[in-house]
Image (cartoon, rainbow, N blue to C red; front, side):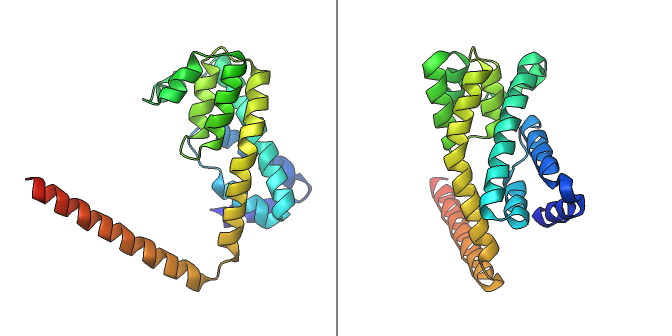
Amino acid sequence: MASYIVEFLRESGFFAIVISLSLNILISIFAFIPSVFLTGANITFFGFYNGLIISFLGEVLGAIISFILYRKGFLYLTKAANKENKYLKRLQKTSGYEAFFLIIALRILPFIPSGLINIASALSRVSWVTFGLASMIGKLPALIIEAYSVQQLLILSTEYIGVGLVAVSILGLLMVWSIRKKLSAKQ
């Protein structure tokens, strides 16, 4: 996927930055599309630091624009925000400093999708300025980790990736075997 985006950026010439930012905004609006492919493409095409800056700007702009759109009328997406996550439910009931620090914490946590945070924040009483600042602060560490991880994957040779995939596959099979064994022992 990232290779297609890199090729598209290459063909875009002068407009590559605008296109990358626009793609990040679209990813944010659609809420559940991972941005890791775009981050990888940005790092490959623009270099690590420039790609990181462009990805960061795109993710923050995307978060703010999607927040405003959700608040203005895309509330049919709110069903996704009703997940059983106590922090997202708490965010919907907060404002001010509490919301600010909660958004930062949620942005740093890697297992909570960014789209859910955007939707929950749009349904809360938090202002778009507070949301934007908290998102900017919270996204930075998460995006640096993501960008560094993607860069390291791009550097790895295919032998290392192959060994890693075999190791992960073996671990997965062992986990499935262990779970099946426990389930059959309970019956």
